[in-house]
Image 1 (cartoon, helix red, strand yellow):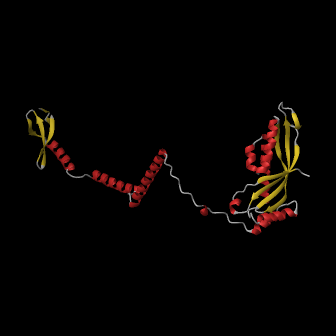
Image 2 (tube, helix red, strand yellow):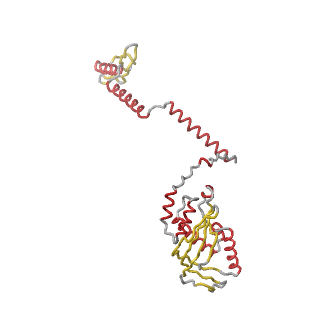
Length: 294
């Protein structure tokens, strides 16, 4: 069927080597298209028979983009492959270790030999002697004793010792008042510890309690230093301020004053084994004797 000379259903019939435009009318495929319609179809045929300019530009842009992307991301090399394999091997080892821990098979790492541990170099004797002579000793005999100790312990520093002794003094006085046997055991020699513990036990049997507040140390003087065999002995006179009172079971004050600051003087001797390198590795001093001031 035709309407105003136009085809109702235009189609393109394919034949070898060419495209023939035809029109489906009432009679089927027998009629030809008009000249204008045939020209338009011929133009469409020529455009599809070769690559147009827009398509060519798109292909070039895509190729350049792929090249740039490859240059940025790079490609996997043999080194990359080796690195991946090493990471996988580590993951496998970690999984094996986790499995061993879960099954109770603990792997113990080898210990580093003690000889491999670097120890500090001894300080030159001239520096140690200069430091000791600069220390404000109460008596020249103390300086001589310190120089003797320094022959065994080249790291000796009198000022550092005094500060440490003061800290130990406060801990021991407070631990004795509260009955803290554990702290005392770490800071006292066996003989002094036994004496302190005995006094604490007697106080507990009487149901007495020491109420104490440590105010501070007013003065700490090194009054003696000497060597006996391979052991160093240092004696310090402490003048401290305490608020202390002894209370009975009912809380009544037996001695002291819970409201008054009192000056207390103690003379304590500390010792330390400095006979060999192994002993020197332990920097701790222990209280080995106590005495009342003259």
